[in-house]
Length: 91
Image (cartoon, rainbow, N blue to C red; front, side, top):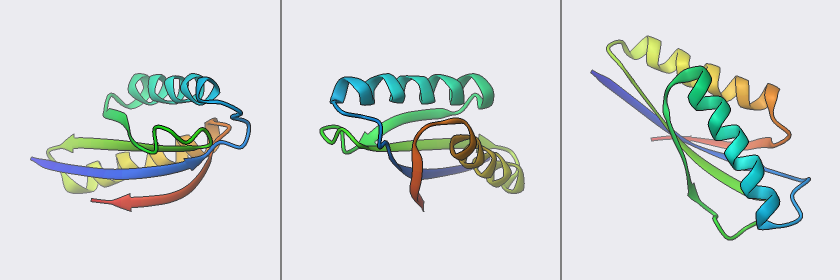
């Protein structure tokens, strides 16, 4: 069993309040869970309205498959959200 995790830090320029951030966060999390069936949650910067830090965990029987899934998730976030990915920290 292989478990890969990463912290994804995003910048949301369109967010003017924590309420805006919450709506964007919920949308991103729902899309990722539906498409990839992985664990994902906000893990840091909860009180900053333009910064969103998400933790993502992938479990697989194959390390290569897990890494490919994590790479696809990152690409999906970059291509399908209004947030800019500014940092990825692999754990």
